[in-house]
Length: 115
Image 1 (cartoon, rainbow, N blue to C red):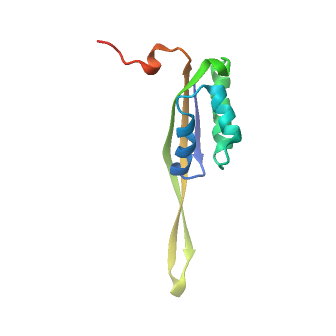
Image 2: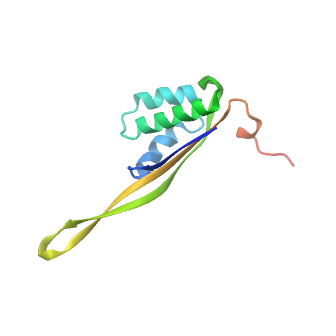
Image 3: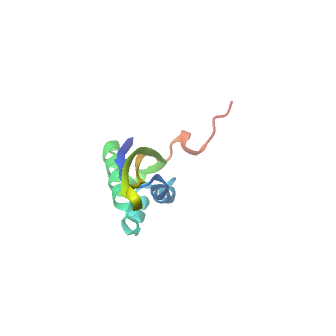
């Protein structure tokens, strides 16, 4: 039960703030948190969570966010004109977000394997 968002045009550092809030929470509670969060990346992350819930086919109250990873995507490079004919580089960062859901009472969620 996964969903991924590739090449989202916001820096990974800013998106990680949002995903760290919802890691380990129940899916329905995470939806409510993302709905009321005042951050630009909250809406795309909420849509991604909704997509993961739809992929699972299970009620949101029975799912837990097992992991939410934010990785660096491609860096779009632009330049800004500066004095005396110089150019100043501008880096536009992108993110790749993956949300993985698990059943609420999955044995692999919080317990370590006993050997």
